[in-house]
Figure 1 (tube, rainbow, N blue to C red):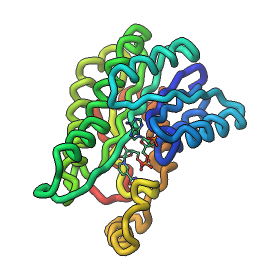
Figure 2 (cartoon, rainbow, N blue to C red):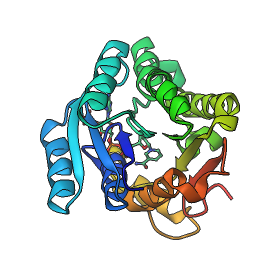
Figure 3 (spheres, rainbow, N blue to C red):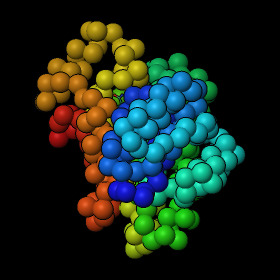
Length: 245
Ligand code: NAP
C-alpha cells in the first residue's frame, strides 16, 4: 500500500489508533484525525514516524461538515487526496429508551452516522477520479443484534450498514469499495467504563473466550484497504470472536 494516503477518524486512541498504526506499517501515509485527544493523536503520529512511516495529525469534529471539509483540504494540500477513508470515530450515550434524552439520540446519531455521510461525501469525488478508493466504516455487532440501553447507538451503527451498501452500489463499477466492520467486545476506553461483572458476562458469551483487541479490528481494516480485497463490496465483516455466528 505504498503511496496510498489513508485518513482514519478518531485515530488518537483505541481502535482508530490501531488501524492508523497498521495501515502505516503497510506503507500508507496516514492522516490521524482527532477531535479532543490532541496529545494522543500526536503520540500516534510520533509512533508512525519513529517506525519510518509518514503521518500527520488533523483536528476536526467529524460531525461538523465545515470542519471535515477543511480537514480534507488540509490533508490534500499536505499529503495528497485521500485514497483510504476509515470512519472509526464514535461515541456512546447509553440509557433505556424511556429515559433517553433528545441530545443522547442526536449526538450519537450525528457522531456515528452523519459523520460517515459527511466524510464519505468529501472523499468520494477524488476516489472516483482516481478510479481507486476504499471506504471502511466501523459499525458494531450491536447493529446486527440490537443492545438494550443502546437504541441510539444500535440505530446509528445499523444506519451505517445501509449507507455502506447504498454507496457501494453507487461506486462499485468505478474501482472504489465500501465495506463495514462490525467489531464485537473490544478492550478500549469505550468498554473500560463497564463494571467488572458486566465485562465478565460479555466475555463469557464470546465463543473465542476472550475480548477482542484493537489490533484484531485493525487487521481486518488493513485487509479491506488492500488490493487483495478489491472484489469485496458492500459487506459487513464481524470481528467479534464468534458472537454473531
Ligand atoms: P474510544 O476508545 O472511545 O475512542 C473513540 C474515538 O472516537 C476517539 O479517538 C475519539 O477521538 C473519536 N471521536 C469521538 N467523537 C469524535 C468526533 N466528534 N470527531 C472526531 N473524533 C471523534 O472508542 P473505540 O472503542 O476505539 O471505538 C472506535 C469505534 O469502534 C467507534 O465507532 C465504536 O463505536 C466502534 N466499536 C467499538 C467497540 C468496542 O467494544 N470498543 C465495539 C464495536 C464498535 P477524541 O478523543 O479526539 O475525541
